[in-house]
Image (tube, rainbow, N blue to C red):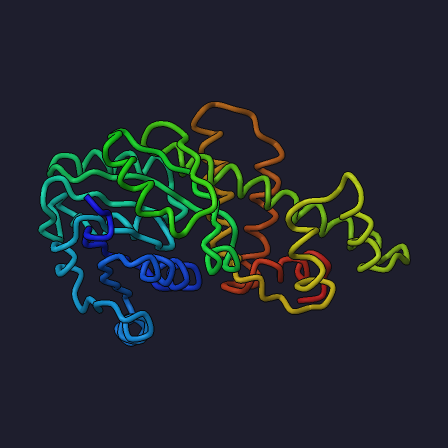
Length: 296
């Protein structure tokens, strides 16, 4: 079967979801889009020439539903009520591809609940940010217990991705994403600390970033984030402080659940949580301003 005949729903049209859905529409899928903001739903559907969904119940007509939402609790609430019943009358065999940065334990629990109705859940969180979402070059970490569902999901996400890594059973993609974002957050925090100290000692911040990028201190943050968003003070990377803090907290809780002593993850979680408590829902790069004392 040509996968483009599959009816695909896309839930969550934020900074990542909108360009991701744009790539699905461009690949020719029969796409239906939904966002909690009705105006956004109508605007994106009109731009892409796809079907707007006014009520999530309409997603029952879909063969595959893709979600790109802030938390795993929100993902669950789209499909399951507090009593555990389906909120959308999905057919047995429907595949849900959750591309959010979800909690792996909650994903496993949601997957079990959906399986009781014959609905198959695949976790497929993404990395690469808004630019790669727009380019269709995201890295995707995919976990699934059902091989047929995973194979279908892999074909559906292909227009959005450069690479798909099959990580294992359900929840393993989410675990990998949280651990990846912990590493990214640790690099951002460490680079911030170094720049703050360097500036105080008299070093030029942009020169420091240039040297880091030509040396062993290089990271995604130093290469793509610090120049435009910290040194040039744009503070508009597209990755919100509440979201990266949530992801790092998931990584911390994962390690606690495994009984591991994880002092670096504990420290990074505390640093980001402190910045979040002080700044609220800003871009994550503004944490630098808080740590440096500029926001006080």
